[in-house]
Image (cartoon, rainbow, N blue to C red; front, side, top):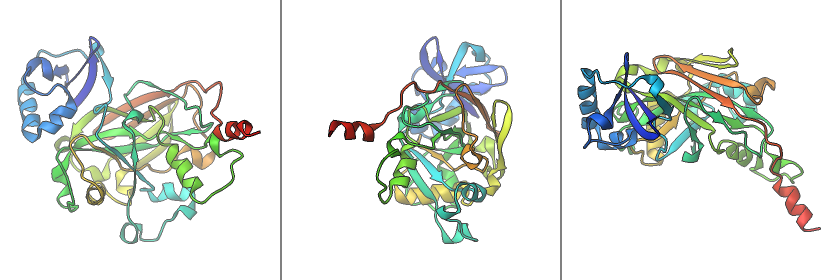
Length: 316
């Protein structure tokens, strides 16, 4: 089942994407969930009911009548992975660590992102005022469907509702690093801050349920900038597959319905060869059996944020 969240007549709703259009769930199940997150929180029985009532329905909205938003516009948590493809680690900086048997003698490297980073498909992504270098990262994203704590990789599939696409847009430079004394951990925190900007986590176009996606461990991914391929790989190249990631994260924190886990990006990012995004660039992400999502980078800021220099001037 392919599920979408959208605006219809300026009202947020969600539905099932079918060959002839979209079956609007709230209009046909008034006492049911009002949004996709509520449907996931209601559990597997709610999703089965949605599938049943949508199966033979013909009262569909035309896709041109709705404006897609992120499948989960306000996830309870967004967890993302750093360095989950060997070639990406190598192109970034070997000093960040890659062993000859990484899946055995290392662990996943998760970090949290704010819900304000979420953006929908077909939107313009704002260029933040604290970075001159903006990059792209296509990622397969897991959407959790049931509360999940300390599960094994073998159990993980029971807790996955489905999958979507995330573009983990990244600020590769920070203006507050300029002229600053170097301290331990500065590089790490600058990198982390570069993941948090508003709209830096475009998500979509749909949530495709796990049964429809099937095996998530060998899906083709491709990212294009202005129609030219920059990233092309399969999820088979992950160091840690989807099930090991869910298991690992579930030992760190309780995962709840609607949580999103972005599973890392393959090689080909702009940082590797200096081909950073420019204002107006169109970024298109495609993942096999999930779909295609396009976003555009907005204009470069006229003024950049420079907190260290401002603070220094205040003391003079």
